[in-house]
Length: 127
Image (cartoon, rainbow, N blue to C red; front, top):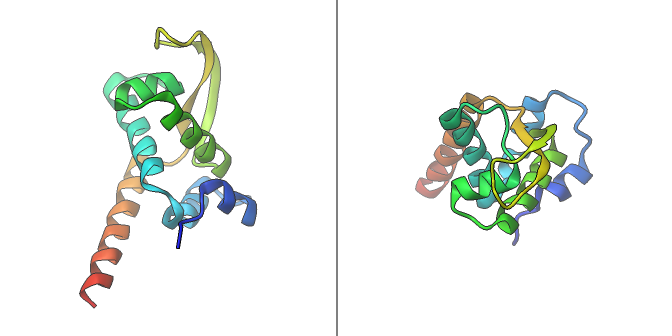
């Protein structure tokens, strides 16, 4: 059984409630790479102090190819977990002007939700 993508989940249920509630609803469907990109976005912004990150900047920071990051940013954007920032010149030398991304969900909520998810998985294994 495969896990549905964020795009599939976004098509199933409208996200008219708050971004945190939407995030909690989508949490079980986040694939591992989407988790990595979302956590990486939070980490990048914290370490650099920048207000947003482009796909190229985030790919360089995570040590991933852009093709592994940008589709996840698009899925997270459509799910309402992140939002677009204004267009600006990228700090990545391989990008020109593009829009950045910034999270709509606080890092504490991300960490709490991931911890809860891991605890549920551990509890299910022990049962």
